[in-house]
Length: 321
Image (cartoon, rainbow, N blue to C red):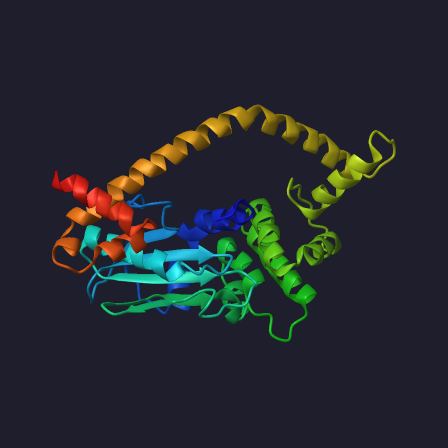
């Protein structure tokens, strides 16, 4: 995921623990009696961890693995990535696997830019894709969990005006704060999510009208102050937001400069580590029962691992020695 989209991914990972049960019931329609933690660092994971991975325990029914991914942009290779996760999860836990992708972006989805299935000669696979904007915003607004309330910004506003919806969300967060839940964290997350719907200015307007005070380094006022501060330099009398933006921008720049050397070293190490990990994945799949019994071929191993048939055959020949 590109750097600018990691901020959205982070919000969902931070809040999933609080929202997974209501989301599973309201959006997915899944009955869940109990959730059990399972390792999300799969032994054969290639590039990243699953966004959410839980074992669902049912009183009247078979247990299964629940896997959820969050997408901010369409991805042509999503079906193949979900299939790879499916194979690894089922092979690891020997349980049924239910997979869902929550799409929170604004770009239009199509079978071309976000396929949900694979259909080949000896392989048929699909996963469930849900667009949060297709759910009424009240689905999330009625919750008493602030982590779920902020998702209303991604829902369907229907005929409601944008400003009215935002006022409703902020009013609900204020009520939750009165019950002892501080909302600074959720205001920050709400503003980040609002970028996906281009609603930052409306949020700032509502915050000012409702006299809600908060301080965010990434909010629109900070960014505006930073730009103006750069233009006007040391000029006295600029607005408070410009001064804050300039000062914080300089500090952030200094910190980033100090870390450049460290990051370059980390990238080199990470690249080499991924190459070794990929090699181990290919070996593991060639030695697995799935390959030995003909369920997957060398061609499919190459597709699932993002390598070439030539590379897979090379590894296969190494194992034969």
